Amino acid sequence: MALSEDLRLPVACPNCGSHLMRIPSVKNPDDKVHCASCQRFVCLYHEACTVLKQGPGSDSEALIEKAVNRGG
Image (tube, rainbow, N blue to C red):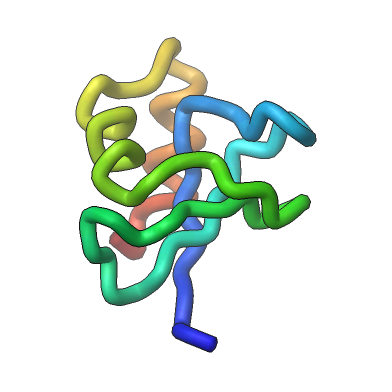
């Protein structure tokens, strides 16, 4: 099993509502991103990058994402 990292996205998992996603540490564009809570497939890594570039929906979301994603 490949090593992975957790990343918080502004979009929640459609299954459980968690914003914390698990991404492969290799970060290939076509790698699958899964919910860290329920392990449901959410999107591909390149799609997650697009969502992150679009930014959070609010100032409070921005603060949370900055704190959680600071390692990246």
